[in-house]
Length: 114
Length: 112
Image (cartoon, rainbow over the protein chains, first blue to last red):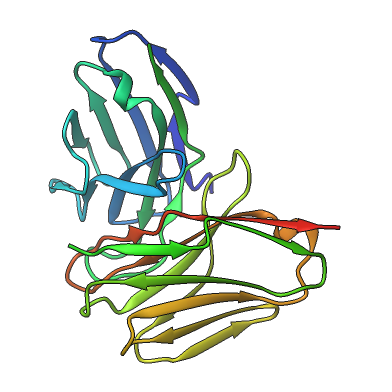
């Protein structure tokens, strides 16, 4: 099993450009998450999806949109990138649709917005 | 919503010493408390977790304690080794939310 995979690994954008970060998992997990990690601020939840066809806002959703394409894939879109969105983005998944438990993280995407 | 605070932000110990990292949380409904380790340039990985019906849990050199009354929980690493050097994150969650709220992280440095 590849686990949780993310593409791309690195990306540089200019202010105002758009892009989509891709995430896929092959563990048949129901819940998927998008986090951003900034220095000294830990991991902050952007959006999550408890099951195919559902998405919910996390702590910092402004400036982002998500799509749960199917059970395996959960994408994050920046419509008009801003320098404040420079960060490392992590996707994660877990088996359940509710409750709590271990989340499995992808390798991350390092995004720089100039 | 939940707020998790973590201390200290950096911790330096000699190899063989113990390390303790502390977290407090705000939501009394939180009942799941995981700890993640993140090595430089890598993804976070779960090292231990505890649920609110247990006061302490151990796994070899790592232990976590939980005080629900005071709303704080701690990670204890004994006999530290250089490979324990990493950033450690605590988190809290409740059954209703399906979400984790993370602390700000602690950078642990173990000096040989």
